[in-house]
Image (cartoon, rainbow, N blue to C red):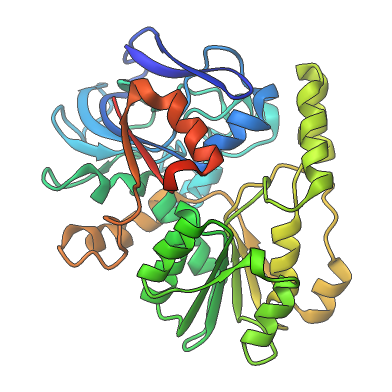
Length: 394
């Protein structure tokens, strides 16, 4: 089959790789009909290369048609249309029993000190072949895949794989009070959904911040108040002034480790990438290569007693935070990998009707064949051609 494979920094290729097969009774094989490029994939394209090896298959936002199931899978049958969550969970361990699916104890990558295994996402998370491919082996298919209606375009349901539940969790964690104000840093795909879900779940005012004109315009189309950060000298100060001199009740950081505007973080990331893999792994995992400009701005902008919710991916362990200010201002901080299946039953009914309250039909800007994936990665990273979200068709 054809699949997108990693070969080095900014070097991904569509190649022929062996077809997946049933290996365990709880496996399923899914023929992929749509698979998206996630902002997290750009971390693999750029800074997390030390944890990949040439030929690794990328991708963790897939959906398709079940082709084959193992003997232990009774809830699915060939022909079912499914979305595959990016994290792999058994559904029955101690953590899964508490709906902490991203911490599944059956698939935890304990050798790396990490949580549940992920599709297509480095040795840190199990080196499981990903879904930017024609076919995908899905472990623990007795629990993970989400059955969706047979009708309707893929993009009505595709985002259940990651970014839609990730945004739903971020908004839930932000806990904006009724009638309150939510600010969202970063209007990429997750940030777009955070802003829309914030309005849907009752925030009186939602403010989105970004520097890309197409992203700002997309948010504006959905009734989001937007701020272009390139026009602001003091972003936290502007937000505080804009919201009653106190700041927003809740702030979401939907950007993460590769934020613009952090020169020292960029230097650290570049330096780590020049080291041999073993040293680069240690520097990345233990020393820290995050660019913290957005997280620090979020912590300074939120009102006293407010909540900062982090959905953007971070990777460092010694990142300096303004703890004295956070403590004095009583800021609450919530974060973590999304527990996808915890939220999908709430979200799925919102996708089935024609009213599209979350605007899933207005996110994808480019749909390209899988063979064009290398070009799509470059375009997405450079934010060229108005690119906000890319969907690949195997």
